[in-house]
Image (cartoon, rainbow, N blue to C red; front, side, top):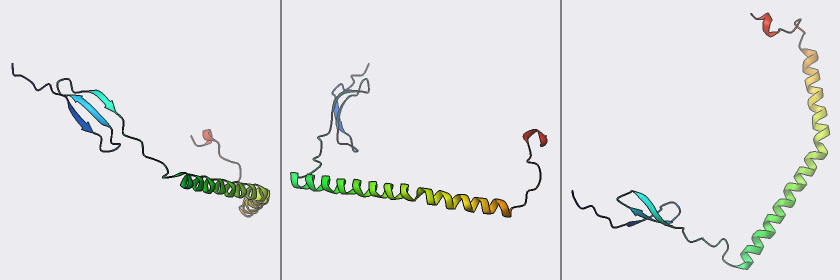
Amino acid sequence: MAHKNTAMFEISCPDCGAALKVDPTTRTVIAHTPAPRKKTFEDFDAATRALREQETRKESLFRQAVDAEKNKEDVMAKKFAEALRKAKETPDTGKPLRDFDLD
């Protein structure tokens, strides 16, 4: 029987940068070292600016939702009036078909 190389080797994940130790004999991951976390912000000033921008965006979205809710009744009334107008223009062709009428 030939002697197999049993030295473990280390692989770096190209996606996340994690380090994996693999056993070539069993082809299994023996150890996993997660990639170091990146800093979200360079300093506290950048973090506070981002939080302020986020709060401003939230407030803007809330105002848009409130305005849409205020106009919702008018929009629904207009949609209903348009559907009613189309229903009046379309002639009634008789009884509606049922599933068993088609057999």
